[in-house]
Length: 155
Figure 1 (cartoon, rainbow, N blue to C red):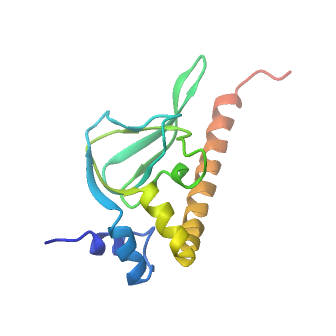
Figure 2 (figure 1 turned 180 degrees about the vertical axis):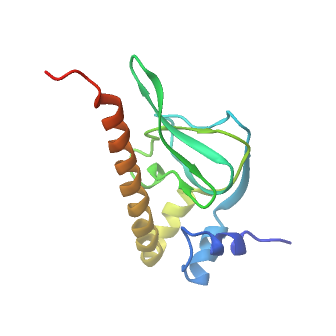
């Protein structure tokens, strides 16, 4: 029987976690396949997992009135997708759509929140790593907003 542990251990986002911490993650993990054009999640839906991307690309989008969907960032192999499962009210803040066939490992947010409550060291390790993801996404959003609104006429 194959386990997801070696794949998770080698992923850049999780590299350096202790073996016992990786075992906890394996217990909350499953393989997923997303077809091109398939939505991974939609803004406002319940955020109950995050994804370790193994192959493919996913566009993070926000709807801009009068303009339609705007891609904030495109993530791919080696990236992590989704942090809203960490913070109440556990709802997605963006749409995420697979641009091509995408393979990922989904980690159950409810399972992980329980495990992090039991093991605060694990929770702290994950929170430090997700803080970097959040900071990067905020910067990407800022740059996109400058692009969207930077061409508006001066007042």
